[in-house]
Length: 364
Image (cartoon, rainbow, N blue to C red):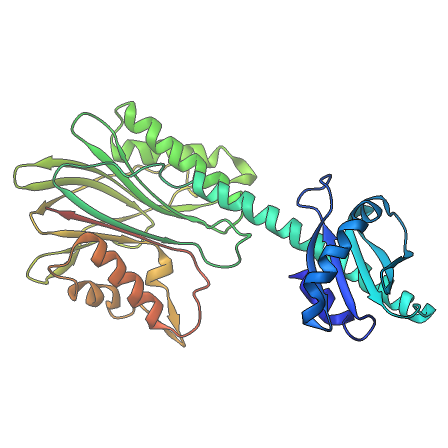
């Protein structure tokens, strides 16, 4: 976008045409990335003429002027933070006055800084997207008798790593584990706690620890991080398929309550609130055991859903989430997850300022 904006600024105010050269990487060769002429019909011909200037452009280090056919060309380096990013070339039929050269050099400095900032932002965004992907499940396992749906939407700018996460993984021959959590804050610090939580849950599950014991050890691990620690709300459960549906043992550590939806439309809370993680040393967690009959749905969300705000009201005020879930009777797990996501989005007109995660488990 920056090369296009450069051309719009200088043509036709300072020159008849503008060509901008940049490289894809810091040490790569310069290439023509944008060309504009006040007379659009002359752009193709000008592009052919500029082929003869490629080497001159590559070698230029300071502002200089050359002749090209019927134009005088002013070549101005694009330099930011001591690094050359490219070249801006302006062409006009007469000589460039000194004040125009000064304007062009000022524009090139601003444009180079904008280009460098955009590249730095893109690199940071790409790195954080890769980090975000690493904090989500690498695959979605097949669980006998289970239909599930998930929604995950980090909020804010693309250069922020969200604090919400979810997981679903095989823990033994006949059992699977799921988790949905919310780390306080965003960014690298929150990501560090998210990574610690995910890997601890998986490791201890494979070692045979029950869900309550896993949370106790995770709580201790977070506290041992000292000043780097962030408190964490977490719903962690164990799923075992049985003939009549699914047997689920789960612990809610400071997390929004999980809801069960019966095919009849009846909704009820199924978790006992317990202390969140990373705050108190002496905490003993206890698991709740619930049964999901065929067709029953278990809904777990982060506070990006329950605390979605519209004016002075929250979505979950007066059982708002349960009311939304009641409307989902008979739907598939993915349809339920999407219905809850849409309900949260439509609850307020402004974009959400919080991350959002939804996990729906349905016994087939």
